[in-house]
Amino acid sequence: MAEVSVTKSVSSDRISARPIEQGTAVKATASSPIGMYDSGVGGLSVLKEVAKQLPNEDVVYFADTARVPYGSRSPQELVRFNQEIIGFLESLSVKLIIIACGTSSAVAYPIVKEHYKVPLVPLIDPGARAAVASTKNGKIGVIATQATVDSSAYPRAIKKINKDIQVISAACPMFVPLIEGGFLEADETKKVALQYLKPLMKAGIDTLVLGCTHYPHLYKILREITGINVKFVDPAEESVTEAKKILKEKQLLSPKGSLQGKGNYHFLVSGSPVSFADLGSRLMGKPLHNVKQSVLPKAGRKGRQ
Image 1 (cartoon, one colour):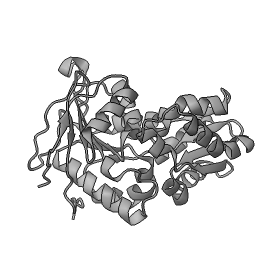
Image 2: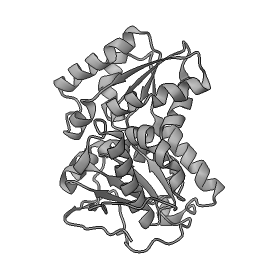
Image 3: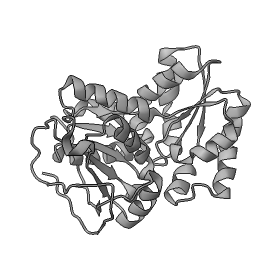
Image 4: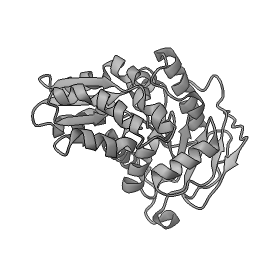
């Protein structure tokens, strides 16, 4: 049984949340929550899409803010972190898990995907499909963490669909620390973004994959640099569409009209709940309610034996 040690919490008006009961996991049902996780606030961009496409669903969102950023971590560390988090969410009887982290989707998912009974929805393949459908000139840019770029996950997925497409990738290691620090429109952030995007614009891309879930939070700055002719691809939309399809096939969609059509969101973080709530509220455009600090079990559950 995975236990959660709650040491601090911060509450405000909305988003609404219900307390989560820890204990031995039971079989997931239509009323069970969706699990989501990211290294920090980045996955909130995916949560926004869940709110649009799956408004009735309850969500347990885990943010591993004590170990952010993930982009500079080794593959071994990333696999271990993902095992710990997935095992923890499994213990809460979630019915599906959205890996709302580009780095985890690129590096850890291919290794852990066969080891869990709960359906796992990553970001890479959905993002690749959307990018291929978007491009007109066959030149796709990908901005992501160093670990995601090193994995070649996006070029591999894109070329699997169309081998003739040119993929130009750029690692953006400073973006996550800047976003987690709340520097969303700072001059320094603009300078860094220009440096990262300059080679992609010079290459003539017409489509840009936001390969980390943090990056949509920099939409304004990125759009200023690229102009209106470059199509942005946020893998969140396609990933949530895929999650919805899986839930429908398994007859696990939350009944319509439950909770007056609004899902309950519960936020668990490994770092400071106050910092997460402050920045998360800013990014979501509404106060986050009942954010708690949780300690993951060190080993985590490794899924089916």
